Figure (cartoon, rainbow, N blue to C red):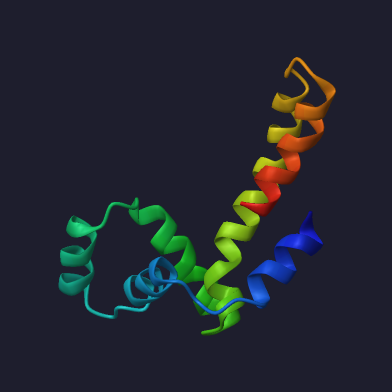
Length: 102
């Protein structure tokens, strides 16, 4: 799972929502940041975690995607566990793959 996420995080250029997150996370002025947050559909915690990731790892695509990658790694075991409750074996095997590739 970690290898799949690492490859996905480092082999695609940034998408529009990732560029917006980058802009919000690197905005130096509090007034501008607050204006953007009022108009954004995403919770500010994600932006702040991304800001910390950029501060620690630099302004790279991987640093911008790292919060998402970590969230996926944390959620993956939960998805596998939930998948165990599905009625058929094929669905139980397919669910983690669909989650990992989404």
